[in-house]
Image (tube, rainbow, N blue to C red; front, side):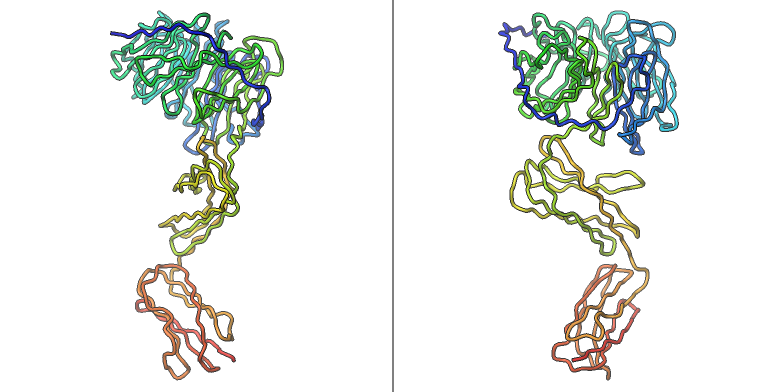
Length: 535
């Protein structure tokens, strides 16, 4: 039996103080169709490391290469249904495909499936799914299934199996929540925004979704959309009608929608639209107010952390920032403004770690990276990234020291490398999910192919000198010093040594002026050099 929870709600409006740091910088902008209207936006990170913005626009979907974020470039325009007033469209990606839905009917109606595998050269429409619906308001994709809502023929939820991404197969059509405006799915649970209420639906059995619980009906709101916090306990929902704007529910008990923040609003009369959560920040498209960032490290007390107004005008209420996407690997935020198009933004979460040095050395097949910090605040740790065929890949992680005013030393060893030059950078991450990259350093790995004993330096010397040598394979190595008549006067080395380049110091204290011989032996190979001691 479904448990319905209702509340008597005393409305408490939480408003923010206008004094705050903006913390958002414009990186790039593109308005490819100034005479058309833009809608939702989504991001796509290709396997080769390039990044793209996929943005709805009147009459289709525009794909923009933002790999160089300061210079966005349109790559492709995919034509789609366009029956006014339903020009808007919603976009999600799965593998190397984009799925686009719209409420526009007529020729070509249905869920478009776009192949992105040929980017940055081109993208192509490979199928339009219209077997069980032709129009839709929204969709979400999770673990190989598409959840399409607000569809023709009743407005419910169609669950589509994407085992074959080009040929979806419907497993169920769910109608118990009535018309569904938006949906978020996590761990086989659908969080449904149904206009009047928010519903929690168990979709573990893809052929038989079941209602678990339903929120209270709050006076005057429209249950528009929402997203779960990082710990998956709190559901942040948006009311598009400017009655309460942001509402926060506690779902620790899945059978109970516990209202913990009845309302959170920006000053003025701007309407909220879509919200997405990454780590401890909520990224919001707020129509006339533009892009808004909230710090939700305390989920029950959101505070304003940043803003960038994409729409400087005041006309409204439904114009300005439509969508936002904060999940690109680069960390850049992309925003679609209904009038002025694409914005690429950088949100500075204020990563408070001062890196004082970052160096690398090689020995044999191993690179050792060393770095130091002068101070640290909320330092979760460092991801170590190495360039592999043009893409930086994480090769290790070193835990940080949280908050400290004392200098800290760190080290990481990268093993089993081949000859060549390797490029490294550090990604410092704080406990709030913010991050910052270090400069890139280059380290050359040179593994010798023959036994080699270099001339000592300085030479002549008094009383000490340095002897460099290299060995092609790990093994037992001896390095001895003899006088001119062949008598051994010093054994500098007699042990197992790793392949690679090495250096050792020889002190001639107690020896007389004259010529000495240094002999290096490894396996069956031997080399000698003459050294001159002058006192």
